[in-house]
Image (cartoon, rainbow, N blue to C red; front, side, top):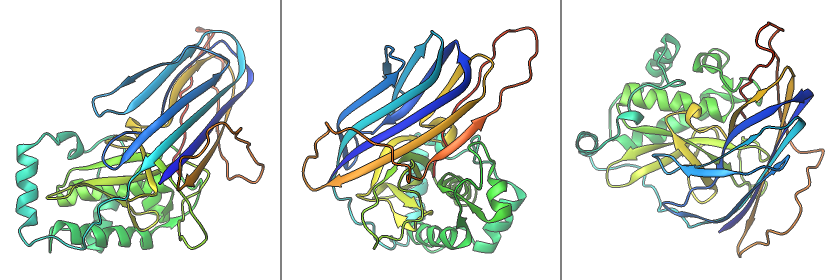
Length: 329
């Protein structure tokens, strides 16, 4: 299956800013059953874009716009081929826990076992773990299939019910959130209660037709998790939509949690309020799709908008910097 992906990000400022510095993680990975065939990043105002790969082979682009501007527009276009994933069984052999512990002991998975910025255990999480009986039992894969379903049923999917930097207790208290919250809660449960390497995945979910029961928004980025399993390697689970990650899940970046892999992350210099608009379109095709069509931004798209408030005037300095990011839906 081929997917044509267009990801538009627009920052509008109520006063001119003198500089914008930005990193993006929108370039799909080429690994496992996925290949990124083409990728292009357009930025306005025009600037020179640089790129590198981090230690997890995530593709990162960055740029600096030093002149005054009232808006920043980023359009990422990619063509990705995704092969059908190997079918994940319902359970493993009875000695799978021992095999998993041997893998962890022999490998280097420490950053996906210990807590990270958004995956720290709390009393509310401990209460949920007890309620859902998240303990080592049966075999690892059976426990994860069950946990994936439990979280899907326990939490309501409500767009904009949390913020980009909300701790897990916000979703645990309200029993609602977006895919970012579902992923962080599942990762924390798996790392702290099951002692399994688990990582956060940022990307896109291709929505096909009305027969799919996806809860996540088609016009936004998506997030799910991957867990290390004996004999299977990294297996993806999507608790937002009660799915095992497969052919419709397109991976852009992996990390410990969202803090490692935001689609955009940067600073601007100036005293201004900013408004962020994001629109995503994933078009599936059985054959290689054309990439030369313009991407409209229809008014009926679900749009994620966050407003970053400027700090009060405080001399000196005469300028300030504002972090910018996108919440994953």
